Length: 364
Image 1 (tube, rainbow, N blue to C red):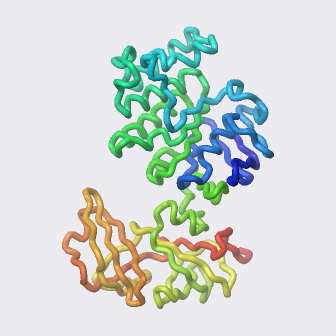
Image 2 (spheres, rainbow, N blue to C red):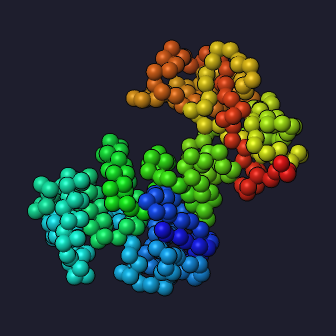
Image 3 (cartoon, rainbow, N blue to C red):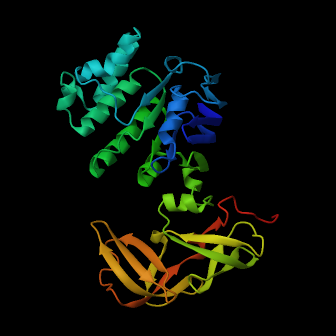
């Protein structure tokens, strides 16, 4: 298990601010954030490449905060992979254990297993410059795992690959994690990648962890507008709480010029302002309103048809534009300029605090 407690450090004008996170045995924790949010800096601090100013790092029950990188028993795969161009594939994979003079039958058996699972047997004598991007990723993964370290840090290693190759490697990473009982901490800016690989997701923004949740609970616990934007919630509007009685609260939105209903799990404090968010996949376009749902009269503004999905922009009478994301087989006969209703359930509305902090609630 890897655990980071209240890690703080400066790097120029930037700082990581009291980062807390953990990676459980055999699990994958993905840190999601935009460029410049501190993702790489966090991994470098955990590896011991950066001196932290306060906080503690624990690995396998030991405090490794002050240990040098080579004694932390953690493998690190940087974004540029750091493969040696003058060595062939086999030499690259075995470099770490040969330098440390720990090559034995256990490592050789692990090497053979990795080469087989990764499908790179035919590449062992090939030079790095003759490999494709996907092949280089596989070699780099093998080199990180062959050390025998069960904790692996991944710094956006798939970001330079095209979509189909990335998806293949997502599945491969899951297979490697299961086969070798790996504990993985990965950073990425790709939302789909994060939720495919992760057991737990944290969102980092400007050096601060805004949310950390199990994947299944992530959207239920989403409370911050910045997090909503990062994970693709594009329909966000400011509201004022009108009534919070029972499980459904009623809000008034000046942007929509209408009342919006949202289900809450605890009563909210009255007289407060919030942001509401609805993911595009949770909005339907219908010819008529639906009882019990939020039904907004709209005009079809634009329809973008893609290979597997369709994106629809609709405009309310107040001028607010909402986005709908659906599979491409839906809405085949929808035309721009048509009148319709944007419909979404109170269950699918995210309630986010106006200040960006956790929502304030009354006692249950």
